[in-house]
Length: 122
Image (tube, rainbow, N blue to C red; front, side):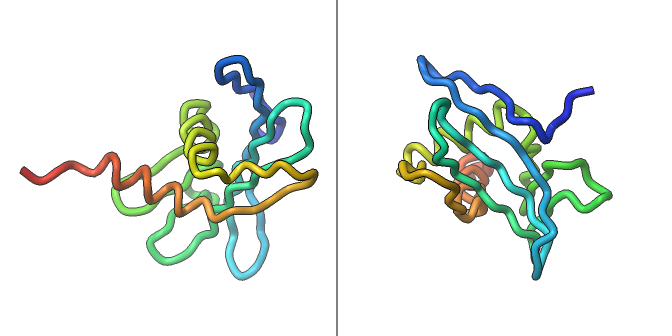
């Protein structure tokens, strides 16, 4: 069985990235965190998904790494999902360059995905 808490490799072009998913019990609500880091650096982006009204996160009933809202539910443990968030973070210029970790609201990127997969009215 894979330990989902360990950092996993993600190769994008010639660049190696490391990513991991954690569940956090920081008040006022539990939250899921997707951490992304370019190999050879200590600058880490943490996309944070706090639970709340209209937002689904892993809560003991749903699998770890689950984030969802509306009709879209994603599993942050899937490499393809991590890659989509990495691509979006890079496109938005969110990746930090300074040493240490920077937290960013992951729901903003999630909402972009949700809008892209919603069926279009004809």
